[in-house]
Every structure is written in C-alpha cells, then in structure tokens.
Amino acid sequence: MPEPFLPCNLPVAPPSEPLQTFAGLPGSTNTMSEPILFDSTFTITAFDQHKYDRVARISGEREDLKFSLDIHVELYPVAVGETVQLSLASTLSPDGAKEDPAESKTGWKENKAAEPSLADTYDYVCHGKVYRFEEGNGEFIKAYASFGGLLLFLEGPHKKLSSMRHEYVYLLMKK
Image (cartoon, rainbow, N blue to C red; front, side, top):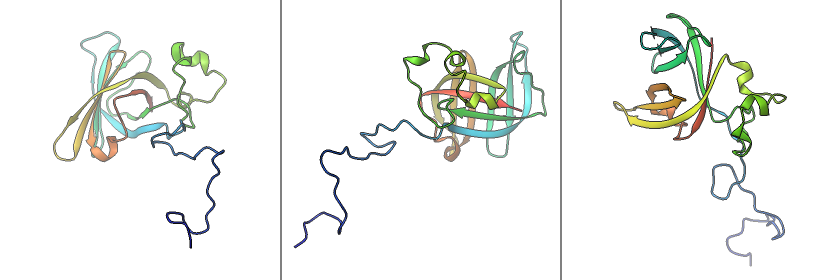
C-alpha cells in the first residue's frame, strides 16, 4: 500500500539536503528579483523654477498616469514638451541582486565602478524612499517618494503602481 501524502513515484529529498525555497516565500534566502518596480514614458507638461535657483518642479502625463518631480535643473535640464522615461528600481544591479547594507555606506559609484549598473543607461539617478501611499478615485492610487528632499508624486492605476512598497528606491530618468 502506498504511503499517504506522497506524490506517486517522486523522490523525496534526503534530510541532508536543504529544502528548496522560492523568492518571496517565508524562509527564502534568494535575493534576486526584477530590479525595475515602475517604468513609463511621460511628456513634460509643466516646468516651475520660481521657488529655487537650481531646482524645478516638473510635471508629466500619459494616458493613465501622471507625475510631479523636483529635479536639479543644472544636472538634468528638461523643457515642456520633451519626452522622458521615468523608472523606479529596488537596486542598481541589472540582475536584481539586493545590495548589502554594510557595503552601501559609501557612494554607489565607488563600490560598483567595475560592475555593470542600471545607472549606466540613464542620465539622472537619485536614491530615496517611498514614504506614503493614498487611495485615489476608484482604482487609482497615489505614491509619494523623497530623494534627499526632492519630492516625487505619482498617480495611476493600482495595477501599475502595486509593485512599489514603503522602501528605498532608485529614481532613474533619461530622455
């Protein structure tokens, strides 16, 4: 009589081998995942530099998303009507490997100079934290992030913004 609860004729891992776990499940030690949490292309609809000399608040839209972002205009000049790609990533590692917090005490350029990075393909990169979410109308949500005091506001469908959490992220932009 076959033993109960065992699949038919499949081998059982011997006790000396560790059990296989999957990313995102309790007990998982896999730190690899998709690094890009959000990625979209926007047309710049507003540019306001009245409050500060080197910082401007830009706004952009596409059919179901809109954003507002404070940027350093000397480092990344933009104008109304231009198209920009805005991405948020959990890590700069292209394979999604999480960074060791002990190694991240110095700048990312110093530590990762010889390794490929998502920052290599973008023009403007900031590190900050997603600090708030709000329910919008119906299926829309609002997300807020701060990058050293430069603020980001994103509004869009829950489906497109649901991969973000209250966590540290990288803002990546290119034209």
